[in-house]
Image (tube, one colour):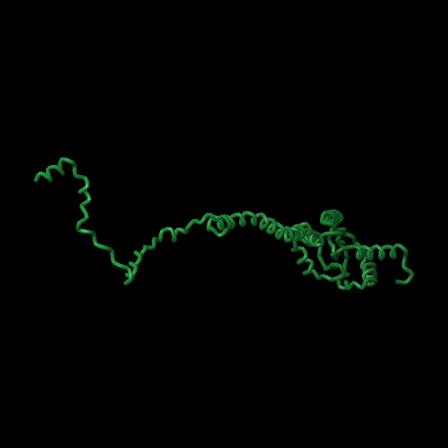
Length: 232
């Protein structure tokens, strides 16, 4: 651009700085949208974390060329750019929802960092969870193992006490009562009579009782009974 005007140079610089600072940018064609519709769209972009700006294609082309951004095919017709300051998915959703009720808004593509996105890519981006939801899900992924670990730690003392109680009941720990198991308590093993010892030939057999040994009650006779016996 030969001898550019200062205002044009300022716009090129502004567009380039916005490309540098933005996490993403979505290029749209706004032909057919009135002032009120554009004001409504800008408000929707601010609420989603974006800034909606209208620039001349020639100035946007210069800023993109300086940074090696290949967005030339998108710079046709009246172009407005939604620069994303935070949630790229949220801005893409806001554009999609607005276009559903305002078909004059056409999404031509965009940039995610320095990666060029087509219209279908912007639709895919709009279907992704928002920034807050993604952060919440990521935090949940980190929190889930910690919660499981905490539950495990809480369960260990209880499991240990149960295991120790079972061990003591089974008599496997020092000082445990020697309690027979139910099977052992119910089983009774008959005791066999011991076999008689073999006779030793050198040992004399028991002496038979002496016939002259008085009966057990002989010594119990009264004096009267003895006198009658002598007289007879």
